[in-house]
Length: 185
Image (cartoon, rainbow, N blue to C red):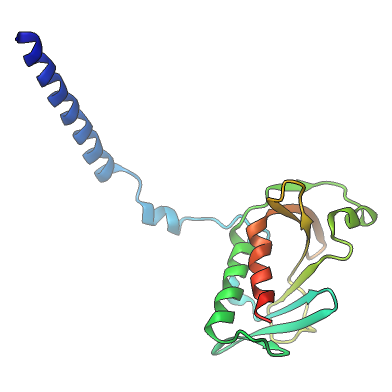
């Protein structure tokens, strides 16, 4: 009987310790909102704020068009089927992924002649980012998407920012976001 009483009190003591630990973690633990605010962009376009981008030149094969940010959102020339909020949402999501999604791998010493093996000469999809409304203004950032890697989980990409050129492996969802922008056509 005494053993059963001790066993019952043992469970009660265990529950009290667990509840106390949970309360302490809730009160003294890390503030999740602060963690979200302290997030550092780690994507290929991390040095550019999405808000400072006003013009995008998109090329996919022989198709080419320009997207411009206006007072009411993004518009495309030539016009696209999806307009207004739908186009805005797709473009903003794709830009945020370029800014925030970290590359999985960086390749060193990929010559232009070898870029064809990665689908990067020419790329299947190319995006040029400008900070002004003029497409003739300097390109702040350019990314060309190639083919999927053999596992099918990431796309090869070539990023040009100023004089720096990188060949990367980016998560497939980054390229898929730009494919979604293309689907608006």
